[in-house]
Image (cartoon, rainbow, N blue to C red; front, top):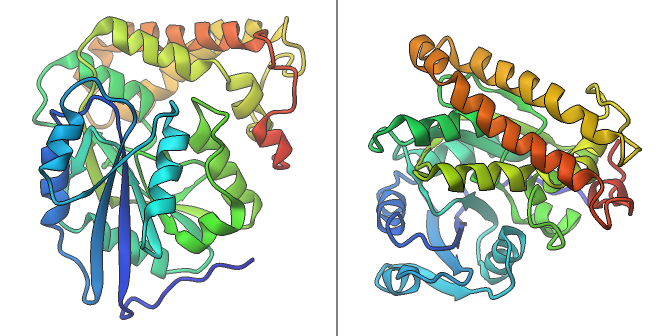
Length: 321
C-alpha cells in the first residue's frame, strides 16, 4: 500500500491521541495548549484522552475538558494508543504524551507542513524539550539523558527513530503497516518506527513542531523508568541497530557484557549533544546521567537472559535488519 499526503488546502481532521496514567496535574495545560493552536484553513482538531487505569483524578479532570475520554484496561502505551487510534476520526494522527504541552501554537501546523512536504515522509517528528516551567535539575537530567536526540536546538533532519511522545503520521500509513505491537510494554514505538522505515518511508524531524515535557521528580522513579527501558534492548532494539557495535548479540548469556560499555558510551553521547546548549549544567550533571544510564544498562543485562528473549522479537518478525 502507498499512503499519500493530503493537500494542505483540503479539509481534514487531526486526531490527537493521548495515553494517560495518573496525569491529572498536566492534562489541563496540554489540552489548553491544543485548544489554542493556530490551525491551517480547513483543519479541525479532535482530542482523545485514553485513561489506562489511573488511580488519581485523571478521569475526572479529563471529563471536565473538551475532549473525548476513553478507557483501556490492558496495561501499556501500545494498547492505550491503539484504542485511541481505533476510535479516532482523523486522517492525520498526532501522538503526544500526557506530561507534555505544546511549546508553540503552530505545533499541529508544523507537523502537517512536514508531512505535506513529501509523500515519502511517513512520520513527522517534533522536538521534546524539558519544560522550562519545571524547576530543579533532577527532572532536567532525566529528560536530557533520555531525549538528547530530540531537543529544540537541533536542526531539521532525517531520523531513524522518533518517540511517540511527539509524532504525527497519516492514518492510511497506520492501517497499512499495522498497529503498535501490544505485546511490548517498552520500545513499542521503536518497533513501529522500524516497520515504517521497512515500508520505505522516511522519518523527518522538525524542531518547530515542539512540545515541553515534565520530568519525574523522584530519583527512584527515574531509575525504575530507565531500568524498564533497558529490559528488551536485546530482543527489540538490537535487531534494528545491527550497524552499531554489539558484543555477542545472539548470545543471551554473553550479551550482558555490553552493559558497562553502553552505559559509558550513552553517557558520552548525551553530554556531547547537550554541551553546546548548556555546557556548565550538563558537565555538573554527568554523575546523574551516568547513574541513569547504568540503570538502563542493568535492565539491558537483566532482560538479555529473561524467559522468552530467545524467541523471535517483533522487530525480527517484521523483517528488520
